[in-house]
Length: 168
View (cartoon, rainbow, N blue to C red):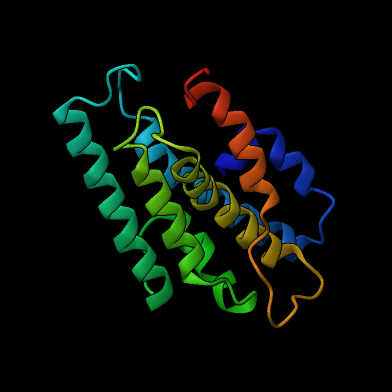
């Protein structure tokens, strides 16, 4: 699994085996989606070339289709096959994974975010959606009216703002 390439993998080792497997499946899917845009060659000062944009858009379309297959029962990718069994067991909502794809897609539009609201939206989509899905697959109990954790978005905002927010 790709998760072993990061320090996050080691933090998951303390979880019970089934929860650990679920969190790793969530993480691997999310990493693969993020790589769909991050792995495209680009000049982040000027943005994507038309060819790179087309490749990234095509890759995101593949992940959107795979998400539909995960929730429809017939995934095709290793990440989808790994994630699919945990979707029903841990009641993982499709909207969180869709939000992640939407957030990653924002990387195709913005080199720098025009305002804090746009940056906050991006962080919510790419960070909180992942955190919410990982939280659902590792928590002991999920309150019926659980909301998406916002700490990830706050951390993302503070880290990303130094790189993308114009200096005043």
